[in-house]
Amino acid sequence: MKRFKLLLLTLIISVSTVIYAEGSKKIYDLNSLSAEIEHILRDANQNLEEGNSITVFFSVSEDKSIQHVSVAAGKPEICNLLRKKLQSQKLDGTKWREGMIYELSIIGRSPVACISH
Image (cartoon, rainbow, N blue to C red; front, side, top):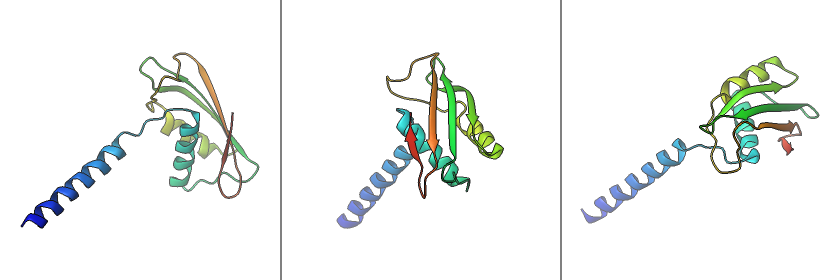
């Protein structure tokens, strides 16, 4: 019975940790935003072909969320997807300043994208 309780306690802690970690997905800097964009594209089966680039312009609101997203990409479906997914995305940390316009460019490489600011 003691082993069962220990196993149950371990399982509960593991599950609660995974749920907590999954729920707090915040963006801390441009590198983490770039990773989020790459994740969005992978989930939507949209590939950034080698040599192509995506440039995202956005500003930050008072409550540290992305607002006024503008995306420049070769494919209109990528532009629409990123605009929809990034709008109102929460940001965290002290690096973000309200009212600033940020620019992030991602250049397609094979097989992963790299970041340049």
